[in-house]
Image 1 (cartoon, helix red, strand yellow):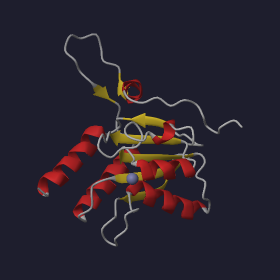
Image 2 (tube, protein in one colour):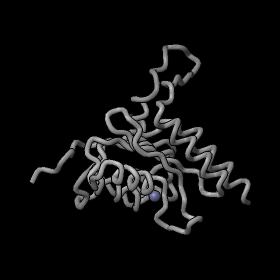
Image 3 (cartoon, protein in one colour):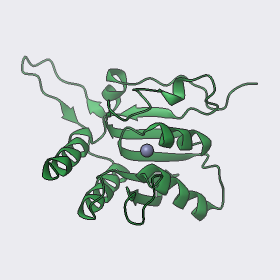
Length: 181
Ligand code: ZN
C-alpha cells in the first residue's frame, strides 16, 4: 500500500534555508529572515497568553487554505489536563470546526518542536505541513528522541519546516522558566 503524503521530509539546516533569505557574498555574516508568517505570529501570541495564565508558553495554529481555523496555547494546569498541549488543543478545535477527524490539507504552526504525543496526533489528524519554531532537544519527538515521523509505523508524515520564529519562541520559554527558578 502506498503511504499517503509519504514524500521524505527533511529537517534542520536545509529547511532553515527555506525561510531565510540567502546571505550575500559579504564577508560579514548576516542572516536575513523572511517576515514572520501571520499564523506563526498568532501562535507566538497564543504562547505569550499561555505564559500570562501560568502555562508553559507554547502556541499552535491550524490553517486551511490560507484561513486560520484554530488558535490555542498550552493549557495543562487549569483545568488540569496532561494532554492539553497547544497542538492537541488546536487540532481538537479544528476537527470540531470542520466536523472531520481528518484535517487533510491543513497546516499546523507551533512555536516549539512537538512532543511524541503531539507528533502522534499530527499524524492521526493527517496534517499536511508542520511548521515549528524552536527545536526541543529535551522533549521533542520530531527531530529528537522518538522521531515519530521517521518510524515505519507512522502512516502519515507531514512535510516539516523548522526554525520559523525560533528565537522569539525560545526566548518566551527561557523567560518563563527563568521567572520560576
Ligand atoms: Zn505535545
